[in-house]
Length: 130
Image (cartoon, rainbow, N blue to C red; front, side):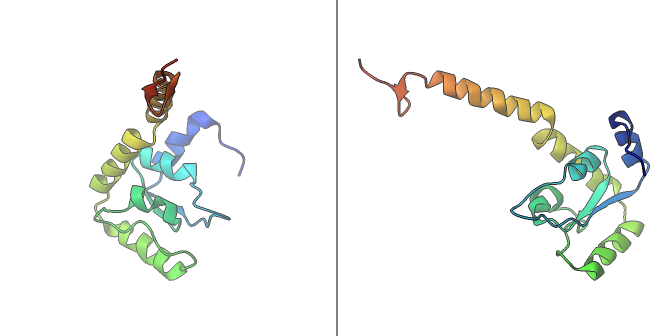
């Protein structure tokens, strides 16, 4: 397939019921931004990446499956085929908006900058006497 223009990605994701991300990070706990994009579009995501346990966990539907376990992946997809997905999808969207959106990231960066600026000229958080 050819590359999809960025502006068309939300409609492409929304046209599907479930997104499957059976990726295995090469090193460390890397995150696939397609998982966040799908969740932001209120689509459930089945992932084998343990780094998504917090985002995808704690729902009525199991969305995180063991790595290298095609049977578990297939079983999760089968369960989602007949499940009521709307509530869990709405929860995922809320989680992404609250904790993983560009706005949230920008707020965190601004907070860090403000914190650094407020501690300038201080030692251990206290003004040094000079």
